[in-house]
Amino acid sequence: MILNERQRSMAVAVVGAALVLEIMDGSIINVAIPQLQQSLGASGPQIGWVSSGYAFFFAALLIAGGRLGDILGYRRMFMAGMTGFGLASAGCGLAGSAEMLIAMRILQGAAAAMMGPQVLSIVQVLYAPHERFKVMGIFGLIGGAAGILGPIIGGLLMRLDLFGLGWRPIFLVNVPVVALALVLARRVLPKGGSAEARGLDGKGLALALPGLAALLFPLIEGPRLGWPPPLRLLPLLAVLLLVLCWRHLRQRAAANRTVLVPPALFGDGLLLTGLAMVMLYTTGTGALLLSASVALQRGLGFDVLQTALIHIPFAAGAAFSIALLGRRLLPILGRRMMLIGAASQICGLLLLSEGMAAADLWRIGVGFALCGSGMGLISAPLPAFCFVRVPPAQAGAASGLFTTCQQLGMALGVATLGTAFLAALDGGADPARAFATLALWQIGLLVAVAALSRLIPARAHLAATTA
Image (cartoon, rainbow, N blue to C red; front, top):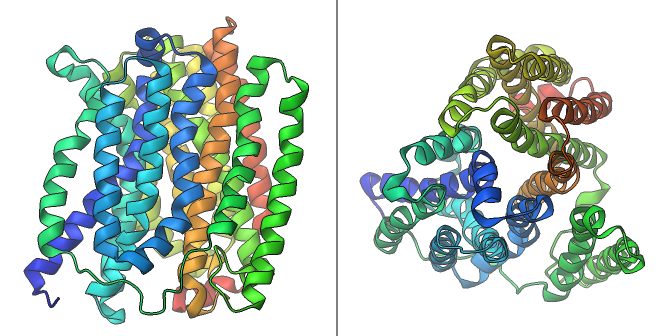
């Protein structure tokens, strides 16, 4: 299928819309949490599942989604995933109970994992290597903006209260976008898959998915259920399943068969350092975005529009640091750029805590701006550092693993810190004090990220900026 430039641009717009939807729907829920609790009678752990269930199933099935695209064709998997995403979005918007909303969010995350990996694969098919950098740069900016703008757009939609539906349009708005994208996708997306696809590692997936789930489930439900003995055994089951998965991956790789994740990747110390950093960092980020929105509404009495607007300094700070500061500072500072980012975000968290305690909008706004700037300075250079030593033949698998760790970190952040924050509020804790406690945990995670950054070779940025 040979496409002219106009058709290629349309194809990029179609897959770009999918990228925006899948990222935005991870964060758009945060401003709706108080209304969800009131409308559906959802408990803190149930809200934890609404947020982390999406991120977890997105993460756990992401690599499998990429392999299915190789086998069945990128356009076919993209359209199947987008159809599922649209149906799940409609289900979320029509949910009459917390249980139904959780189920639909899980389906939404699984569908996102089917369509998400096809975005980069389709770009690979459409563009020659020397043409991809510009498109990938645009996608990087769009993806970063989508995650940050999620709460802002969610707040605006809720304030409009379309047709008196309250929070439901934040999901229902996806349906017409998906319908239009599907019509265009059939016309402009290439059908190709991978000529080297050799099947799906079903056994690896069957071991990894329940292993990761056995880690997440007790973190969300343990506090509510009082940690009964069966729940305490689940982490041991998780370790057993993940050890068996590792053994299976090594055996399958030794036999030169398709594996879920190539074990050789885990021999790269720099990649492992980067994956640990991204897991720790996104754990704190996931909890921050959830807790700040709830604390502003329940503590300071903000409505959804005010909550949305106060996030604008966060978005502006992140955009400034990613688009301008990051490009200029990385060649000069290298790994030290992440130390500056961690310091900026720590200062921002302290200002946010003080601002919420004193109901000071100035400190809250500046705190958000510093947090956004810090996020950009940390997250922008991490992929470049992680992939410095990764062979080109394993770049796709490494990228999938990196994105999986990002989403798992978000899920764990909501499941642990976020759920604990919501439980404290349900127990009558002052929202500002609960946020301050959470901020201390986030600062601890940032200190750990800064410490790990010292393991990155001092001259790694030279390879990263010339690769």
